[in-house]
Image 1: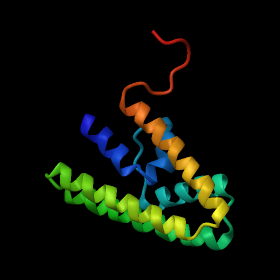
Image 2 (image 1 turned 180 degrees about the vertical axis):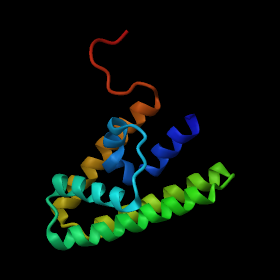
Image 3 (image 1 turned 120 degrees about the horizontal axis):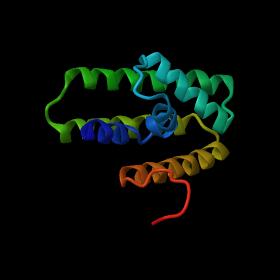
Length: 136
């Protein structure tokens, strides 16, 4: 379980930036690459107000990433570090492709959004999670 949690967070630089909270709320449901790509595009559209051309391009980018992640998972690479590095590279490549289709204003919002999500993921990884109420 711990390995899966780490893998989700690592895969998450971009993909989980967009879907992490929804995946946590929805439990461990298995989504197809197409469903994951569509969910990512919907979230990004809400946040950045993507136009139709951007939505089409983003869908292709996220679908490529989701398919590559599926392929990597299916390979069940025993070398955790190599798999982690592969997922990080995949997320970085996807991030660069998404940034390339955004306007200057959208890029600024996107960077802020990614930073906020990264901080939330860091807090979750440290076991803090989103807590309500006072601290001990």
